[in-house]
Length: 272
Image: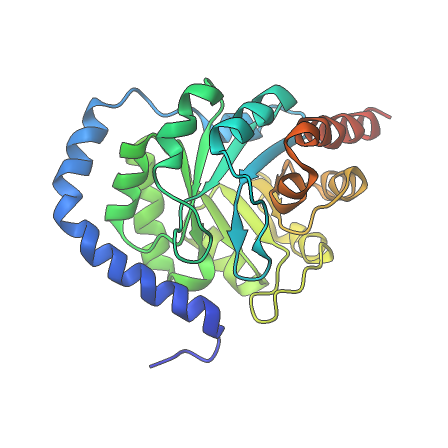
């Protein structure tokens, strides 16, 4: 039965994910075997908690709301530009049907990022997807509080930690944030995009920052288009911002400069 609280596009995505999970289940043992031979995951949490404003730069070709964002899409070239621009971590969309992503992008960009942690951004509902993320070389993964109950969130958070990955747990409302905190999430993201109508309002992050435990690492996601936006969020108490569409639309030549502007502007403001 369709939960009326879940928008139609999100329901379609989740239905697709459930089918994909069934296809991945026979590969679970292989994913687990590969994870045992992997080097330790890079410390995503430490990358965001250095004491200076952090930027998670996202590699995203398309989205249901924006359509195709960048035509000449080279994940490797983008990753190199992000590294040169000083990104603290890189988020990679791996959903194929709705975001034109691919799981293959993670191992493809790893050599270009070197010691920069990779966040797998997808709609993760099942342990097999967590094992797959680590087997691909991801250092963290996204969990969406609004599509998982507290028990399932806690299960996936703990599995990630067993594999050396601290997940980013995303919320869109106070209730979802409460569930993420109850499940034990440390890296807490607030998505400024309304999933019902896809409008964006960064004041959503400002409204929810007061709920964040002191020990948490607060991340603001979506709709961050300028250094002033980033500074506004860092001033509110966020330790990191996740930026994707703004960088993609700026072009390869400019995205590194934008990352530096976001970080440097925020640092200048925080040092005053």
